[in-house]
Every structure is written in C-alpha cells, then in structure tokens.
Length: 208
Picture 1: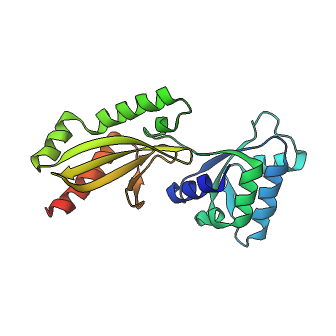
Picture 2: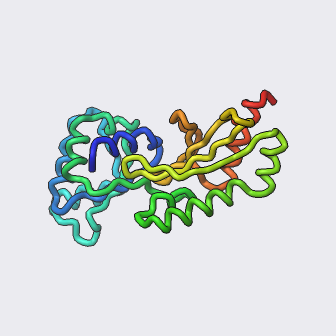
C-alpha cells in the first residue's frame, strides 16, 4: 500500500470504526504490527479477538484465517505513526472498514459495479420527493464519481443558480459522509441519513 492512500484512509476513518487488515503472505507483517503496538504505553490497536491474535503470533500460522484480523486503532493514533506507514507499505495487502454501508459498493474493484452503485445511490438519495424539497428552495443538484489514490467516492453538488451552494462527499471505503472540505459529518447507514445531512446543511445555507 502506498503512503498517499494510507493518509487518505486516515482522514476518512472514524476512530470508532473497526478495521479489517489483510496482511501480506507470511507472518512478518503481523509480527511487525505487534512489536509496534508494544512500543505504545496504551497500545495502538485493540484486537476484536485478542486470543486469536495471540494464537497466530504464537503458532506463526494463519491457518484458515486468510491473513485477516479485525481491530480498532486506539484514538486513531496508529495512522500518524511512521512505523505503521513503513509496515503498511511492505506488510499489508488491504485495509477495509468493518461493517457495512450503502456506500461500500462505490469501492468495488469493478468499474461497472461502481457505476451501478453510483446510479443507485444517486437515485436513492435524490428521490423525486427530496428533489422537490431542494427545488422549492430554488436550488439544483448534480452528482459525479470521484477517485483519489484508489479510494472511490461520489459527490453531490447543490447550486443556487450559477453559484455553488454546498456539496457532500459520500465515501465508498469508509461509508462516511463528508463536506467537500473534508469535514466528517456522520456514517451513512441509509440513503435517508444522507438526506438528513443535506437537509441540515441546506437549512443553514438558506438561513432557515
């Protein structure tokens, strides 16, 4: 994994979200993470299944676990640790946010699936009823797919005539909702949760 992708993941990850890490072949990557974790007084990571993690470290055998472990980054501190960045570049194959969100399909490895997800999310959020609500304020909408260092997302832009009013970014990797400036708003559990965030921003914008 490259450093730029890791930095972007760090900015899109909420500390309360568990992460599932797939390590490269062999045990070296996981051993390096364990050593790094021990350097921190409070620990950088908290494994969801600590006994499993200890067993893998002891036997040095992934057995049927597929080189995957789910964990929490304590207070998100590991993202800023240089040692983790070096480890991730050589010892980690993939980092995924555990759990599910309607946005996750945007992160599909297949372009066709991403396009289908983009269309489905757009129609699921911008329903005729919600579009009518937006248009009643004299506003219009547009949406676009985004890709940044391998992370896929989409942006819904709202305009007031020729003037941009506001935008929300829906991130496929984390399942989180952001402003275009990068401020995290909430986790997307449903299309209605996106509408809720957009409605609040719209009310603030219009001074209602």
